[in-house]
Length: 428
Ligand SMILES: *Cc1c(COP(=O)(O)O)cnc(C)c1O
Image 1 (cartoon, rainbow, N blue to C red):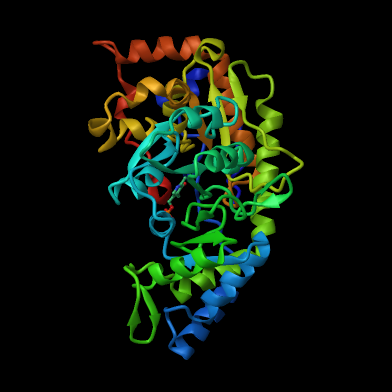
Image 2 (image 1 turned 90 degrees about the horizontal axis):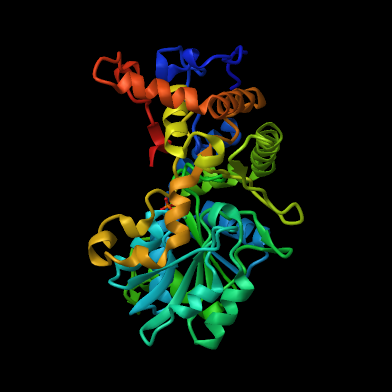
């Protein structure tokens, strides 16, 4: 998938925002799907069709669940149709109501899964260093209506699970984790999937490991696992027996097939991410105002996200100007998770003052930028992205002055003449 060798741009006049040719012919995505062995997948598809068992906990879903449980070292792993429905089922099976404490610096689905069930998400600020929930701040937000804490292992870096467990224990709260970013990751040597009451994964196409659409709930609690299984299958406990309210959260056999094939290549996917991350770290080191987030080498990691914080004062160019410049070059970096869930509807209208208690989140959403990685990206691609960032930061003042001239009343506005890049699947 490597693109042709290019000469690094030397001068700002060559940048695509000023009318130059984009550095990359095809867009580089943040979440381009990782795909395993095609022949194996075709073979499994034939098996599914021959068996005429397409869904309803078929043999491939059963096999995937047991392989996932083994990988995580957890008693139960329940495959679900997607991560959002998995979160909704987990929240319901835990009996959450009233208020649940959750970060705002996350994907919208984390809060939606609560609000969808008329549970109030209480947005809590994160630690500026780790980007995950700060247990001390969480404890300050506990009220008489609080029933649970929903932490997010953002960027695949585990929350302070010990600190959060202690707060949950002291106040008798349920504790669950949105582990959508943290598949195949460990915390102090123990795999994510084992913490809190349960942990929820997403296997969406853009995640490091995908089942087209899919997700899973992992737990060591036998009773909770039984409730989760009922709830994901309309509440059925036997052929004609419905004992619970339920929904349809089943994973199909074709999704399980994709997962089984992907698992065989998981080490390769993660190895590719690790190599890309190391190359970014090498080439971005020493660029003023740019901070690349690292991963603890003592833990298992998936290196799914290459996270950079941009300090505009030190870099001489802000995050948003960098994003615009890179998009024009076909480098589709993302501003995850701008502008923060509390600034999205319905939360912005429902809780207009939430931002007052979220100073760290409000700062991070203006600085954070996610760079492309995955098996679709070669080391040469990473080099090309880093060349552009180095040029942009080195010539920040010149770029901003040119942009101002181009946007002036008599400017040529070359930048606005360029159509926006196609965002495709990774657009969200
Ligand atoms: C992807 C994601 C989800 C939603 O998962 P889906 O499988 O797309 O429904 C939830 N939370 C976070 C943090 C995510 O990144």
